[in-house]
Amino acid sequence: MSVLDVSPLMWEALLCCFLCGVIVGLERQLRGKPVGVRTSTLICTGTYVFIAISQHVATGVTDPSRIIGQVVTGIGFLGAGVILARQGVVIGVTSASAIWVLAAIGAVIGLGFPWLGVKLAVLTVIVLVGVDGLESQCEALQRGVHRKPQRPHGHAAGPRPRHAEDSE
Image 1 (tube, rainbow, N blue to C red):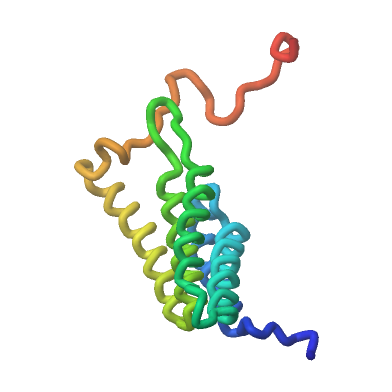
Image 2: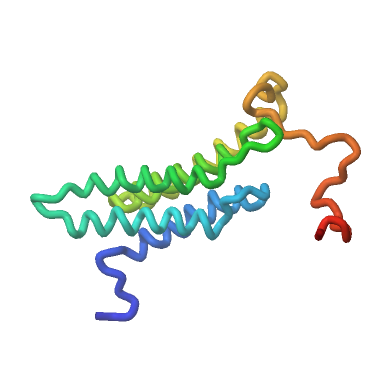
């Protein structure tokens, strides 16, 4: 057994997981969102490993498709962790959705379609950037759930300075 052998996984698939994580994660990270390159790469790779291993250990008695269902459930908990309510506005839903899509991409790669996963990652970024551009240009798309939280007037951006009385 060689040190570089990753059987039953495949280097091509691992490379595609890395590419997908970089493609989606870079968009999120450049926008200052909670799901950056590291997180995106780990989600995609982790899902790939679970799906690929389930395919490897499958027998006539087992059902490897159940692993996909478990990944969907588990990734939902991870996505829920990035959703917050701030000033009456729910934020983080897009990042949670990105997490879900990254898991789906990892599943696609795990099922044997590594370059389809990369295409889906590119499509995901097109949706994230394209719809954001449309929302910026079209006032009707800025209403409702898509409004941005507003800072109260007179408050500077960033954390407020810490004073001696704050530590008591």
